[in-house]
Length: 94
Image (tube, rainbow, N blue to C red):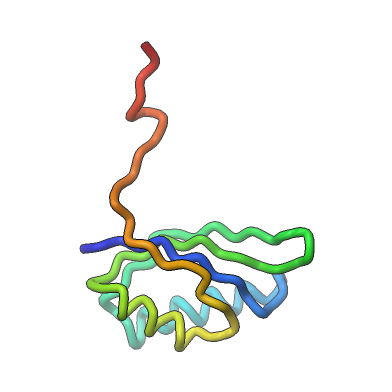
């Protein structure tokens, strides 16, 4: 199944993000069972804007966009299909 990196800027505070996370999970479990939410990184910039960098598995980009639209309270900044993963272990020291 394709995997996607989703970058979002939220219109809520950091303290409000747990409710957003619960809503996202509820949407996936209730309306988008084809989507797998692997993990997310949450960052807050100097102006207090909350951004997330999420990895989802989904059959197609359109389904990810539909979930994002229903989630609301954010701007979808970027959506990229992931070509692969690497870690330091993939590059042993010489």
